Length: 600
Image: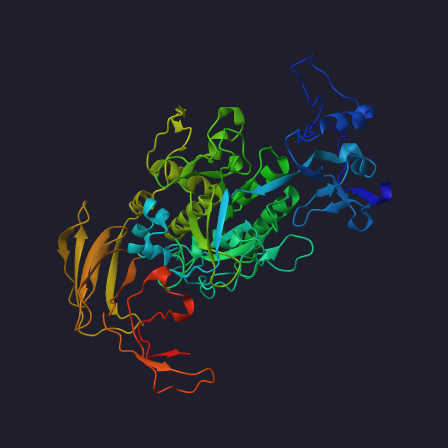
């Protein structure tokens, strides 16, 4: 046995005693049991004790076991026996099919803990795919959740997940105002060809599943999650993503509705190593992950999982998880180690499937249901094709809305930590009260309340101090500056109306207060009606870009045969978009600047 492992440091040997994931830190591990007096197990009893205590609860599923070595021990990878494997990106952790494989190979005094390699589940409740859908769902009202969480309040201020903090240079490139805010999505992967993801939104991902080579989605869950966060807005297709300026890093851990705990922890540890490598190399290597979304879970505690989540938080990553779909007070992990998000329905009530708060869950019970967000009939991109969409229900789809808010907040304040964002949610969630009472002020059904972008962002902006010299540029939809445009700026009153007008100085610049809302009114020549909007400045030297949209788009139609030859005898009739009454091949979206529409 000795040639297959080695001691790195000399230490005191202690007997290994376990109960699921009980750490082996000294004698006695169990100081007391409910049914007998204090006791301890001698080393000679270890095999029998393991077989009787390291077992899965009857209601749980698991695929073998995880075991973690003491710091003083290391297994030699080239000598691992059949059935024992390393967990990628995780030092000192291995999987085994049986307990005997562990005990026949590793001296028990070198094992820190053993626990079942639990089965982890995606947390969606009911999926309804619609591969033929091509409507602008936000315009049609299908994205009811965005109105519910007041996502538009962020868009009105130009806060869409981009970096707006010029006081910190997150990517070490010397320009503090253009850093990427990156959200890692541990899920089933993403369809990179989907029409609703802009070029550059999706980073090259990683798969943690044997037999796969990339992070391409083969299930659908991950594509929808990523779309809720970062699908393109104003592209005349599909849905409006909440924070479409963020980057998404797909980490694929599912190819069906469940996967192993070791696969999940491997993905978390990969994200941690990417973040740590980025920081230690001053941005030359790795990935600067700001937020981690996990719409998954199971009901059993795990030392391995808790360690992985804690390391992510310590590395500077905000960790968001779904609260669980059992509709009961059962525990749910990793939500209890991070920030758990429950689900509400269209009426504002807690969804029937969303987990409830309970002190009986033990450590971290309050985290499991920290806040709630819409999770009933949520629509987003589907993996099936580049033009497919689907609706789904579950706390899975509430969590990415909180992850998107975390990304927006990170863009406003690059120093935002997990604990700070957690507190920010507690301070700014919209109060909600269910019928099940509360635990220490936290509602059993809603946690600290319902996600509210307007309240959270207003609170965060109020922390900004100082002034900004602002240049205003008015442009058309193509980004071309419109000369002769007139602009008036007003301080926003509490009710959102125009307060005192702000005049420019002799150089044409406006002096505005950082973090304060201003109302603008801009207009120019024919075809550009006056436009009113709000803006907020977060940098000491800023440019306010106002885009005016024309009401007239000169367009000519060219009808061609299948070989591309023009048909001069064709007639074209236009009608207003009838949404679902149009079949896709007969629908054309006329975008600003379009000169000709070709019809086959």
